[in-house]
Length: 250
Image (cartoon, rainbow, N blue to C red; front, side, top):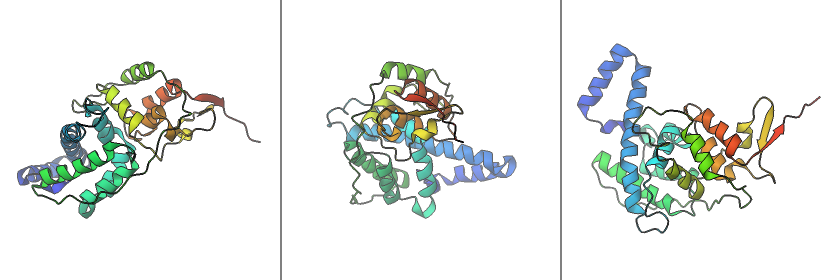
C-alpha cells in the first residue's frame, strides 16, 4: 500500500530534489522500499490483535508472512500497480486480498480490517467500518503429497542472504509456512513455471501446483525477487513433485 501523499512535505521535497540530481529510477526504488517498510512494520501487530482469540492463530507473529507478501509476492506487486493514485483505497486493497487469502480463513477479515486501520493511521482520518467483500472458500488438495517441512525450510533458509533487515521472510520462515499452509491462495501458480530445459515437474494424480502449500509458496514469488529462482529449485527438490523427461515432438 503506497499512500505516498501522506509523507511529510519536507521528505517529499527532499526526494524530488534528490531525483533531480541522482536520477529518478534509482530514487523511485528507494521511495518504494520506504513505503514497503512502513507496511511491514504496521501489519504484524495489527494481525496479532485481530486474531488473538482465534484458535491456532493466537501465537503467530506474522513478521515472516507479511515480509513475504510485501517484499516477494506476485500478489503485492500486482496489487500495488493496480491500487495506485485515485485507486489507492481501502476498497481496492480489501478486494485484492480475495486473490491472496482464502475466504475460509479468519485471516481474510483480519487483514481487511488492518487495511482500514492502516488507512486511518497513515491518513489521520476515521473511516466507517465498510462492508468487506467475502472471499472464496478455496482449500488445498487433500491429494498433495507429504512433504518434509523441516528439510524444505532448511533448504529455503540456506538459499540466499537478504540484506534488508526489515525483511524477515527467511528469519521467520516457519511463519511463512503456516500462512501458506492454512491461508494463502495462488490462482496464478502453475506447475509449468517449474519446468527446466530437460524436464517437467508435476504432482501424481494431476494435482495443480496452486493446490499444495510448498509450490504455492515458491511460485507465489515475483520474478524480480532474488528469492524467485532459489525458491523454485527448492520446490523441485523438496516439494513432492515428480520429475518427467521432456517429450520430443516430431
